[in-house]
Image (cartoon, rainbow, N blue to C red; front, side):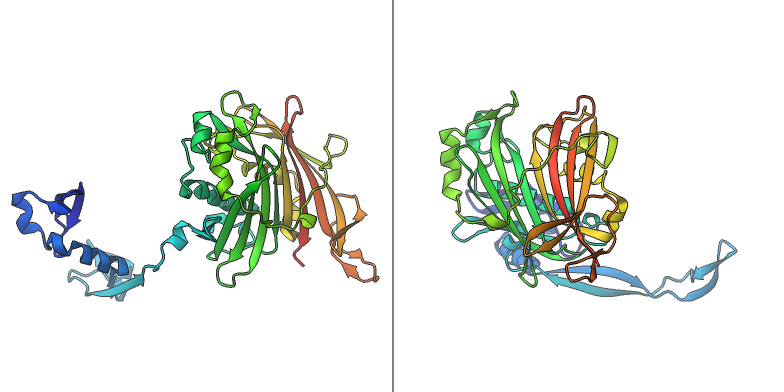
Length: 400
């Protein structure tokens, strides 16, 4: 059932469309109210799609002092005579390829591409997109990839065969490298693809480009395994599931293997951590469709134990997250952080200091002064029994 409005009035006419006869049927008493014939309906829809005109009423009010109900008011002139109203046409052209906005396959369907605009609520105090924003966009693109490929079952990113077996994907490790953070209003283009990761894992990679310059500004890679939705235990990839996803595998690396953070993330304790934030509590809105805390939420908890001075004077150049256990809404958490400064020399780490407050200028090899980059180690753990949930490592680049 559809509703159509006449171009001359706002009366709604209820019609029904028959797929067999390809005709629109209307009640006899409504025929006189229909301002167009069914035969040219497609032409009108085509014209409407090409150009949508929005009528905006703009009043020409005089400033001054007037009276309302016998009382003087300052500001807009409010007389008995209606003000003259002028109409201003605001038109815009719909993009020719809506697939660019909704997502599409490229490179023989091995790569899924989607475009996003950075919204005002996705930026931080420095007016650029946050790491949480980037991670959410990566996740959204991945889920849309599965859906557009026709693989989506009734789970959160699970395939049909996975849904039949009550299986879900869970991320074990993700590494993101950011060269530039987009600003409010910028448009980014994200490509994603998948490949095998060992015998029982899957790797998913992403690259983010600036839509205007087409320059790659972010690269990411991740490893996923399968877990039983009810027992919450890891599972091997069934052959039926492997047969579903293998046709989409692409042997390509978003980040060169020698540039991926493969180093072990050390465990933090009360003795080795420089800062600890207690009492973090997941809320209902932090849960995802798989009934556990969404993996992006941990970034915010990690930042709870990072000094405010670091957040103000540095930007996060990379992050590596190593997920070790699920987190539920009833859990209370601690966030731990340790920090050391480092300089980058030919992509090799050179530790300079291990003090948390070493955020000021540091002499470099030439004797001049430079601001070192910072490397942080993080841990999110259960508050009651100190069981680890997420280990992480971040590298911070000075904004100077």
